[in-house]
Length: 440
Image (cartoon, rainbow, N blue to C red; front, side, top):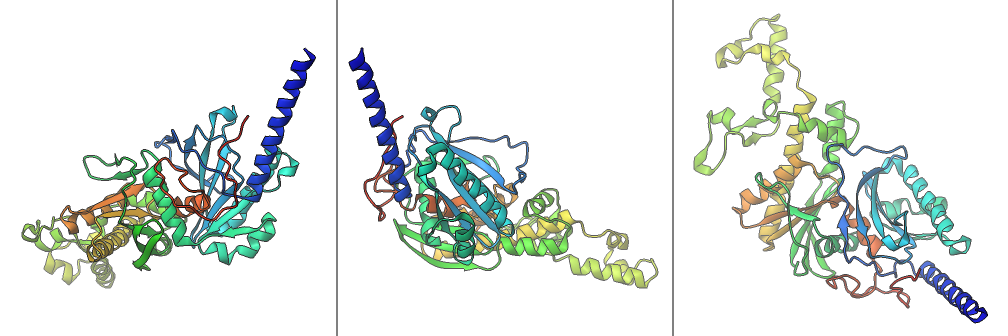
């Protein structure tokens, strides 16, 4: 009996030492843990309830469950852009470590970076509680412009070194991960099948990434870590946000998207039907096609001014063209303005993306960035633009975590060679040994 007890104690001490060694190595070599993506799946949320910011200012997006990952993860990743800061971190399942864990996805407005860093400090504290006081702090992987602009502030607040990663590298690595490793992540859109999921696959190159944040970058990806920025536009999410903050009472980007959902752009835009009275079928234009964004605003404004000058009587102009001047008494609705501007920005991005894909002979076009946010009208407009201009020869692809390409790429940046199911990434410089799993 004494021998059995002694052997049991020895085994326990060996296990404890091994666990301690794993923790120490993970601290010294952040990012060297192989993320086990076997059996990974997206935790579907209740889409009937819109996502709203929590008390800490964070907006939570759907998690990715990793039921077979048991290793210690000692780092979090931030992608800090001009408008939003996106945070990705791993957490164990609360009931049992044997259940694995999950990747958590949160975003903050960059103006609220203090709240974001406050959450990271809380994660640091929880990590020390879970892994012992000698485990040190979790490391911070950061990318995006804010990784440089806010570097000193982050280092001071969090008390650790900030490991900065190249933004474009991270975007591509994050997208490759989603395409190749996560089921039911990538989808295409059409009116009959609004969310047709694509199978995760390895043969993904070449492709065009259209990353829509405050501005827009268009990146040709030819192979692993072989890419170039081939174009872009300054008219992106920041444009929509800025103009709608001036033109409507909406305060947040999500408020603006909700306004757009209930709007009628035909009250603001000049349509083909307004000019021809019907479709222009000879060149393939429907009557609802936008001929001029905000094309009716000047006319409505002039009618209103004439109406005031006429003391409320029908103006001469409205009598001549048959327009009822009383319509000018109705102020333009914020919903209509929001929808019109959303279409204008999205159509512009879609057409430029098509032209770049045509110039560089790229069939597959992936749209990422926090501008999209799973918003149906945005996805529909971008998808329609690619399909229309390419006559169905090219495909527009979307992602359920489209805003987290950079932060996921930063999170994975130092993963060792062949860690994914499809061996989707080449080796990055790490300090060996690589830890594959932790024994409980």
